[in-house]
Image (cartoon, rainbow, N blue to C red; front, side, top):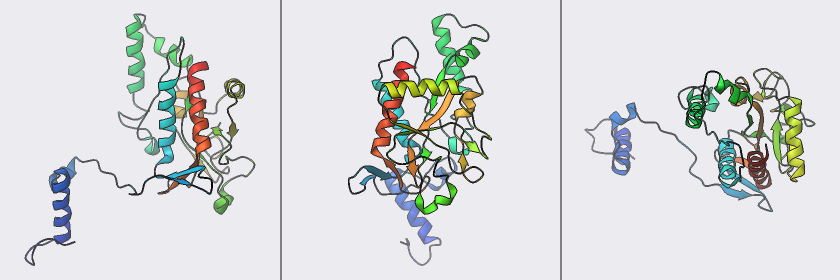
Length: 261
């Protein structure tokens, strides 16, 4: 609604600024430093005849972040150091001091080594080369409406369990981390021993689909890593859909990983 009398210019803008000031104390000059996001106003809801799915905004990557954090808080870790990394700006290249391309995590591990009293040159590299990681990021559920962009024999399906994406990247393996066979076999053995359902998939048909995660960044440091997350329908849309069973499978996978790898 416009604000003020006929002698006032930019009435709509003025009313918007008035409301922001009344509700949040924001003035126009604050926009120079503010970080604002516009998100859908509706709440997440159960979806389907049997309410087996969740529809909501931002499943990518809230569902993997939530299940990872819940898993490490509840895991019974024995004699190893377990870490849950929640990094920012993955969609735009993982840059900045809150992204995975920064040296923040390296610094964090160095602090842990300092506290053991055994830090020395090259020890950080040795830690990475003796570490394993699940890159907890969502996968793509097969969508029959847009079936042409997926290979039906090589894609994830909803309610089939957590999805392993061996390559990611685009154009086949370009830009991906390509987990090795021995590491994948080890993970398969752990999941099968604990009765956790899983599936293997790619992010769309080769030369058509594709996408990146932070996996390659840690792989380049020497960490054993594979993308492992919840398949999502309508990724990056205002109302993404995920199976409750797949989310629970992700939680169980991450918890088991923390405890047994």
